[in-house]
Image (cartoon, rainbow, N blue to C red; front, side, top):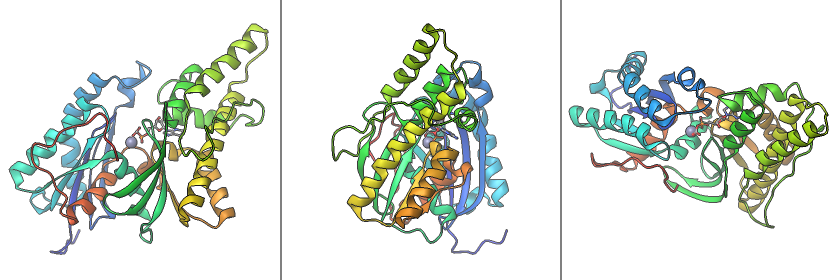
Length: 341
Ligand code: KG4
Ligand code: ZN
């Protein structure tokens, strides 16, 4: 790898949930390496992420992951311009492992430390493969912890949240319904696969759109809706087609996301939409957003699957814009379970 003197290299570190990840980007959007050590196998037996186990796993993996990311990028740690790390929101014990690693490197190497908001990272993931994408744009962030419509006026941090979930996040609803259907963890991708075999019109679940004009979401009722449907079928001695339930549930969530996104686009007048976060990996949601935006003449930007779910390339990308804006942190930077955008 030939590196120009003026190239800005950022190491990104992400440990907010169950992926230990490190990546190196050049000049913000070019990914030189993107290493992800998944903990899925460890948490699978418990049916979900166990925070304390996640922290321990991060601790075991982090040094290897960072070294692998530097090696794959062909960059020595001395050549780095800054170290970007997720500061929140997420599991505090898990974030602390990445944060301690980033701080130690920042101190030892004398390089700036850049604390990155995880959701800003998800939004920046769309910049990586779409070099033509520039603010302003609307971002629909759908992950395990968030469902937000964000007006992105400018980078790194000129963003306004237009609407968010009042209870469960979209990914959380996928995970809970997957558990009800006995699909196990991680629920979202399994439900996505099962829904492909079902009829989305066979079982109807209520679309909760809240009061007129609101861009907020509410997904907590849908899990109860699914449970009630299954119980009433069983009580009546009728069979339950799990694939139809999965497809009907998925269609309901996607309808609501589609309606609110259309309203937010109308409100902002923006012609560009970014779909980001783990749930953006959902095949039916991607297809629907493509359909909606084609009809409305909106440019749609979706990261490839590997950049939708948690990764450190998105953190390094967001960190680049903060570093260039002089938005760096001291070694007293904290980890946050919740953090406003
Ligand atoms: O962004 P992410 O990797 O982690 C958080 O920041 O939360 O998102 C994880 C969420 C989980 O709820 C997972 O079930 C969901 O994204 N997810 C999916 C799919 N892939 C991941 N949900 C639906 N369909 C998928 N294909
Ligand atoms: Zn995430």
